[in-house]
Image 1 (cartoon, rainbow, N blue to C red):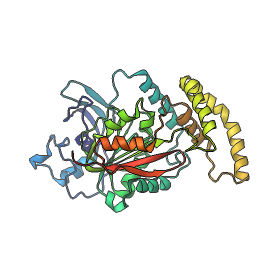
Image 2 (spheres, one colour):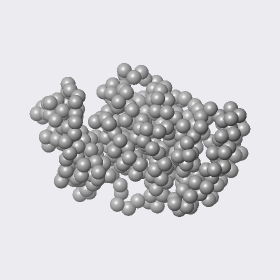
Image 3 (cartoon, rainbow, N blue to C red):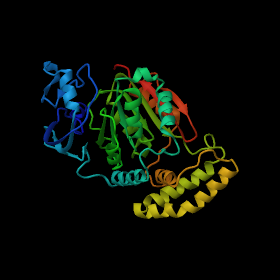
Image 4 (cartoon, rainbow, N blue to C red):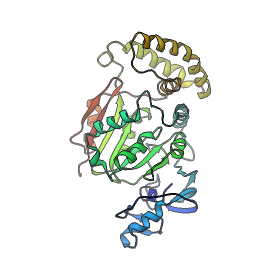
Length: 363
């Protein structure tokens, strides 16, 4: 964890100004030359407020050459949040059973992922281009901008946004796959946080961009999750969120019956099984899948062959989720408009779902 991250954080109670305690530091290589101070509120490295004008860009360069590997963050409310293996952990002391189950499900899903591999058959270059398409921004417009990646999953896209576009990214996820992302992070400008999108431990109005792809649909209530994350966006900032289509002939004319059966299996059987049992169940499905996939490739019915780990990841994503809400674009656009996004629109549609984007206006 970088000292810089503290400038973005707030306690889930709503208070800002978290205090670092008992930091254990590593010295790391930092080669960039910074022209201006990064933090806007508090410099935790020098333990002062940045408006005091006592902080210089050279201080930021010295700051980025340190990594906090252990320690804690204390709030005025009395709560203390641990920093474990470089990641601040904003996990509630008692977690609701459904949220804990969701955490376990997605932790197992990302356990299938090997860093640097595709996600769901998508290469990182495809995902990077899809990001630009969804945001409707050119790469030059993203440089030095801040982004909240709400539900970062593998963390691969967060790292790519920093490396390719020069963005500064706070990547949050509830699952323990975030630990693998932190270990493989090669950018000093990506900061990983473990926590929930329902209570993002981040300051209001802190980010130029908000990106949340396929995460809110796995919350107990999609709109509640949306309302929680949009508070972190600056006025004038752009928000992008992605959702599943309803299981309906209008969206899946040839597959809606099959999807309805799969959804019944998920709600009545697989999502209720212990995670370990699910793992071995999906593992038992693999031989049939690999044979069918081979036949499809030979007959040229498919152009992308999934690895066994990618397929396991896909099964966990679909069949294990406690919640898998589905929405119409018009419904989501109404949520955006109610929160001050008058230009909310469909960014794109694809087979599985659709994305909405909008810019936050001043209230």
